[in-house]
Image (cartoon, rainbow, N blue to C red; front, side, top):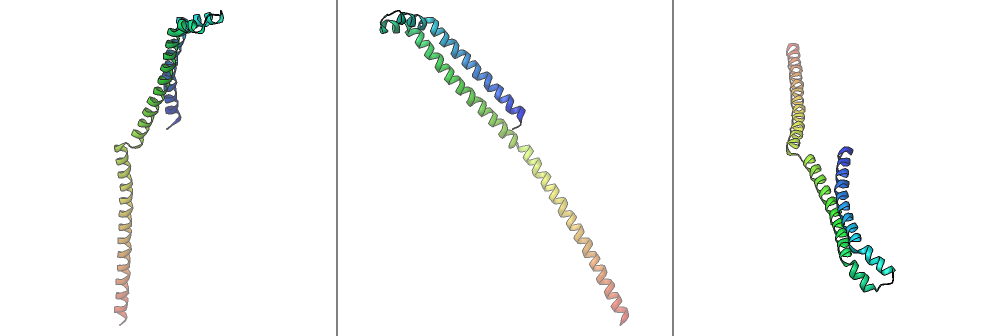
Length: 143
């Protein structure tokens, strides 16, 4: 794969992974705003752990969802980009028409070589026949 295609696929991956990261980060940020910050503040002010966790629970759930969205999104982006890049490369490498064209080109070249060899062999045979006829003619005159 050439450098420009590799760069195009890398940019595509970064965009998809970036979208997943932004979405996941937004959910984590929403979780912090929804209750994690308030639960942490309660904990630092001396509230019981259960009370702080109860306050932070909706935010923790949203933050966990954000992490899951980020993880699944980045893996999905990688698989999607990797699969598409490999398929493109395989289509290019194993293009039926191109393979046929290359085979026909090689066969034409070989056929041309064989035709040249046959004509060269015919020329040599005819030259040998002329020499043989010339020798018979010379021996026929000397007797």
